[in-house]
Image (cartoon, rainbow, N blue to C red):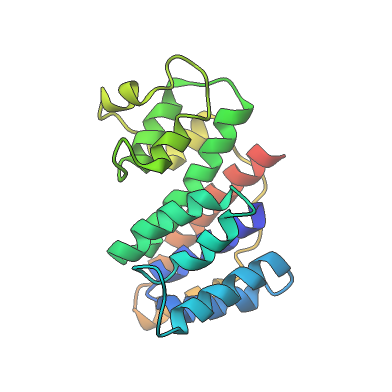
Length: 214
């Protein structure tokens, strides 16, 4: 799942750089051609996008629903992709899902800290308290402070970068495989600073993900 998360996060960064969803699928498919799970996922995403009919109200979500039947890790991606598709904010909510995956691993593997609830508010605030994503979130720890009531009692949040720094999640950062595509997008937009902005986001996320997985 780590490689899938990296690919989807990179896809979110491509979308942030102004690359349309369907074109983004092709770039990620090509960049991660050495990973069969990612190849299959993005083949399904492309097929779903190109289809003229779907049993679901939005594009993008069908492939995740199919995968979650055999791998519950895809539940998070299904829920956040529903929001991404309904708002057209793929960059925001695919990145949020990557953050949610890292947060989940931290909660499951380590003692709970107060900043974990703050990050949960930052990420999961888009969902209603009775949404399955919230039920899932608060099933991750039996700590008495990890309850939806405490989630709702405050508006205090923390950014993912601040949270990762506080937890000292600083592993090695893998290659940003679509860097040249991003450079081209930044040049077309006359926004050279975009490359450094995206590289910074990539490094913060990928270092945290791989540190917690070590």
